[in-house]
Length: 106
Image (tube, rainbow, N blue to C red; front, side, top):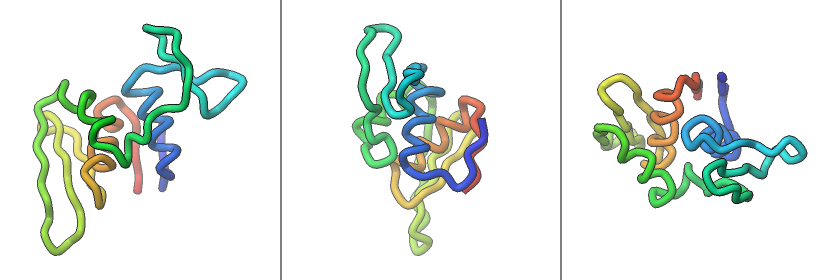
């Protein structure tokens, strides 16, 4: 999967599918099913919520860097994948997507 200049909604949907392993329901491009429970719903706003993304991030060794004066934060996972954005949750989402094989071009 490749995301070029993705919107927050596209990042959230890709995160739900690729990182969380949730299945998108065929009749609805917004609603996902959580296979383990069968529950259905829209994914959390991962790109804007540290509470939503942290449980997934905690599965990795990770570091956060704040580039003062450049208005960006970088998250590095396992020294292999990185994500940069203006906020921590969005940077973490990008790094985790890259760790799961998704190409993200901002």
